[in-house]
Structure formats: structure tokens, C-alpha cells
Image (cartoon, rainbow, N blue to C red; front, top):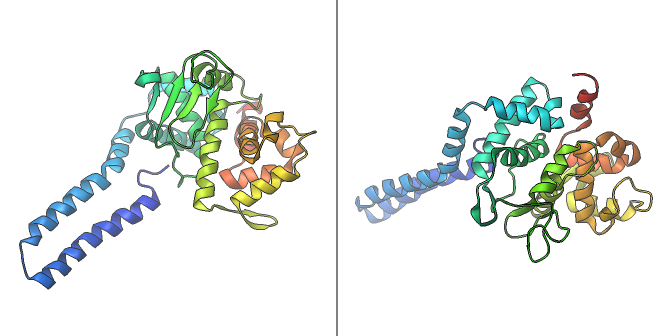
Length: 294
């Protein structure tokens, strides 16, 4: 994540230049200097709105990363623990920007403890680690439900839904399932990774993401669809839930990719290549350091 995303920077600069050019054109055509104060006011208002998010991000980075947060991540995030010094600095940078940008709350706007908010930010930072130009696609934030699950009517501590990624609205997570996902770092199950993968999947389809695979350049939607269709779900390392559709296939595979990538690579190398290209990273290089004493 960047303080100013390249995509945003392009439009900020473009419109900042366009406004005075239009003003000069109006002045030239009308000959009325009264437009100059209005032009300056419009430019100031535009810059104030356009630079609001980068300014908030810059302020968020001015504060040092709390030592308690770092110790918590070292104890709960295998991914963070496996990074080198530069990698940890980038990870902490992304965590702070995520917490500045993304609204994380309980039902009805209830405030949450910092460990819960930090775990959510840490999961997103891991998934974004290879994609510094990407932004977390959570414009409506994250809502955390108490207990292990909720039902289809969003009744807490009922049903068997651990999380949801609706096309509109916030990402939904059950707090107990969120904690459970980080408690066992190798079981291949993490509700946060699963649901956030759905958001990334939809953004990639919308943006027309292309993957450079050994077989050639392929559109993201086509690559994951073909892989789902030819995947042997009967003998797959992935859970049976992955067979439902290509979206769930990708989400389940993403859980394994970030939690236990070596078996996934060995069993399904073509799928692993797709995920590695999508996320622009190979978690084996990070996670296996934890098992080498580093």
C-alpha cells in the first residue's frame, strides 16, 4: 500500500491541472476577471478533498508502531514472524495504512479491542505484501460478529456462517472464527483470508487483471475458471467446499496458499502458479523460515 496510490495520483494531478486550464479558457473567452477568485476557490476545495486521504495516511505513519502490537504479531502471525527486517517494516507500514483507511467495528458500530483490529489488518497486509500498488477493496469496512458464527438472518452465535463477503456492504466476520484462524497457522483454514480473497477476486475481474503464466498471458477470470474446471476435486488437497464454484475454489485455495503453501505447491503446482502470479509472492519463502529457526 502506498500513501498515494499511483492510480489516485494520476487523477489528482490531472484534475489539479485541468481546473486552472478551464479557468484560463473561460477568462480568455469572457474577458471577465471575476472568474479568477472562483477559480482559486474551486482549486482549493478540490485539493482539500483530493488530498484528504493521503494526508490522513501520512499522519497515521507519523506515529511509531507500538511495541505491544509488534510483540502481538510476532506471537500470532507466522507470516510476520517469517519476514526479514525490511519485510517487517513494509508489513507494519501496510497495517497502519489499513487501520487508517478501513473502518472495523462490531455490530451497530461497537468498538473492538485492538488485538481484533490488528489481526484483521495483519491478514490484509500479508495478502497485499506482494502487491504494493493494490488497495484493500473494503470501501464499506469490516463488521465483526461475536461468537463463532451467525445465521442467514445475521443472528449472532447461531447458524454456521463464519464470514461473508457480500457484493455490497462490509466484510462480515465472526470473532471466534477469526481468532481460530490465526491460532493454527498450518491447518489451511482462515476465515479472514477466505472472505478477503472474494473481494480481491471481484476487483480483479472488474479491472480485467492479466496473469503471466508459463502457458502465456491469460485473463484472471479465464485462468481461475479453467483451473477450477480441470481440478480433480475428488482427490484434491482442498476442502470439498472448493468444488462449489470458481469463487469458492479461489477463496479456499488462498487459505491454503497463505497458511500451508508447500503441500499446495507439491499437490497442485498449476494452481499454485496461478495464485503466486495473482498475489505476486510465494509464501513458502516467508513461512518456511519459521521452521528453520530464523
